[in-house]
Length: 278
Ligand SMILES: [Zn+2]
Image (cartoon, rainbow, N blue to C red; front, top):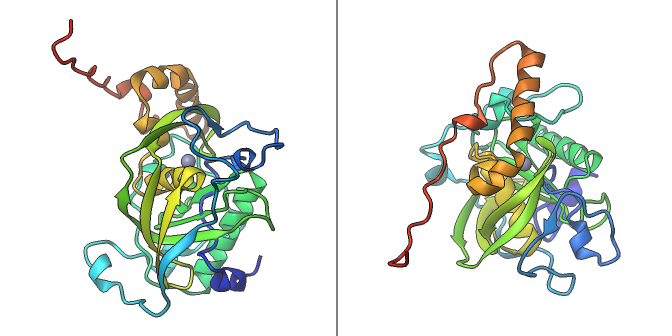
């Protein structure tokens, strides 16, 4: 996949992948491999309803985002540097919780990183992937809601921000490449408006709904150091608690260090308070 394709695409290319796997099933009625991302409730996404991402506003030359990045740490060339094949970082590696720096250099190394991230995403059957998931702590995500190379649209989002969320919330059964084999329900807004830059630095706005909105929000959370189980209810979390503990144990055995976080240290959320009913 040439970088030039991204640059000339009508929408930004390359972005979210690893986390939502094969959600393409939702887009193609006959597709049977719905193993990672299953729509649980209300049916808000269908092949009829799905529309490719449409940039609302796309200005090509506004690269000076100094007002936006003033307060954020900016990535250096070293931060984007990698050698060999990228590997998916798994929970509870502290890289997933580290701060992700903003990008203000839109050069070949950024294109190379986005390209490699697409490779990882396709190789692992993902439809979205964030840079910290491959060990690079910068504000970058790639995705293709169809999850197949050469199909759908590859989207790269650099320094994304959310302008607005819908009030409507939907529940999805999410997976994450950093949590292999673990799936559980997460409630999120059904649609949102995003402001970001593409791989060439051009700023754009895009409205996302349904699956693309779901993928974006999962990957956007990664860029804030938030993991999908952080947003699960206690009841849902209980259903994957042992799996998370097993990952913590594996990490300790593999690295020789104590797990940097433990799911059992999470405080249970307070039960919703009723309104006068006993
Ligand atoms: Zn993920």
